[in-house]
Image (tube, rainbow, N blue to C red):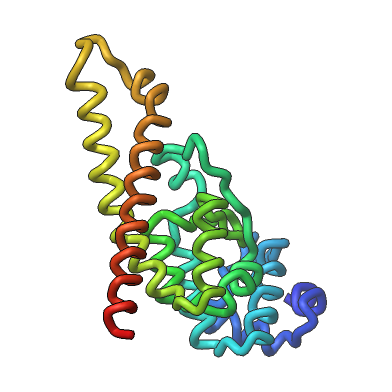
Length: 217
């Protein structure tokens, strides 16, 4: 414990307090000896970084709980590794920087539940670089991360329905010997349709907004 506290730049008393608050996981024990490792040190450095960013200990405790009970990377990828997405590894403090400190327990829990985030030791892994960059860009535009995640859940519902529609179209119509490999081969066609339809829908929305502004002028 003294060695860990020294490496982390804190007192043993502070370390005990963090243990009591369950901000760090318990050590590995061999008889009367408690062994700490690099994961404990990384967690203590993360706590220090979050405190510097203005997080309270209560908030950090909630983050730690969500972090410890989140889906791990093996479980997430076991559900089907994305074939076209690039996962991104982040420390908790890097995630806080990406989202301008909006990494609240509620937002973290929502991202874990959506399957956007998974845990890997003391790191987090975002399942998609494109989704991470898009979410961060929306937050920089002043849209709260909570609202971005709420919208993401609605998008998930629609895209699941679209994926089901395209799967049924490919596998249950046309040649009877269609296979999942055919679905994989034809998936760019589904993406083209969705992208084109979304583009035209946005054009219609923009046109309607322009007409409304002209009518109000």
